[in-house]
Image (cartoon, rainbow, N blue to C red; front, side, top):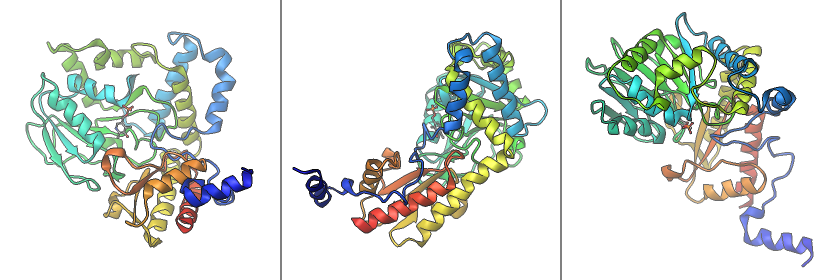
Length: 384
Ligand SMILES: *Cc1c(COP(=O)(O)O)cnc(C)c1O
């Protein structure tokens, strides 16, 4: 069959063969929720430094200085108050949850449960035999619950941005609360504004708004959180060394990690933090996400086939947009067509099970590319 005929044949049978005109396509087609788009400049900087950085010891100054750059850069980016410290360790956010059950939760935590990620920390705390049964406050997907101040709660577990549903919540200490406020900011950190006085521990991994790779956790800790870590680590509670936050604290103060980290991850992360800080800090990085979100949600609201999944506009995430489609349009087909055209990872969170696309709008994503994505989706729907 001649190539022309083959294209014609396919376009009649499979929507995936729809070709989106080049002038409509985003210049960069990565819209995944993590690992997410890494900017070319970050990779160029890594390649430039590679001969003296990659493949060298993480116990020597070349790498330790890079870790120091990350820690100082985060202190600047979040304008951390006196006494707050930046901790890091291996294993990503999922490992940090387990560590938190040992050295951040004293006896009882309260969890706001409103999606896949918030429920994972809840499960970790519920199953941990060395702490009490947590209090769980849940709400329907697409919304978030509010905390309730309790005397016997020593840690409030919030999620700044629930990546599975595209819901963000404002980070505020519960009124008159004495417990620590620990925030899963894995997808939020760097892309959403936050006041550090409102948290004791703001933890994340670098493969989302920081445009790096996975496998590392970082935690911005207040003096109260540091005090908690030191006290629980000195108690009789047995703790696996890998999850020992006092060990992480001691190593972090020396710009090291307990065991070997991925050096490229640290380098890419440092580049992204520097890019944020050199351009105006969190106002710049979160500003890019909020511009993208404005474009996406305005498009969806004006469209007659797409609707923002999150009803309450103030809870709509500026970093992860979830868009429902009308019944007669199959969102999974749109995602497939986009993928076939080089626009990837717009599929919804698998367990949410909605006729939906999920679009990451982390600071690395160009707001103009979000506009192009909307135009591309319009084109696909018009061609179906
Ligand atoms: C991605 C994500 C996680 C999981 O991070 P890992 O580094 O893969 O463990 C946890 N919480 C939220 C909110 C996330 O978006």
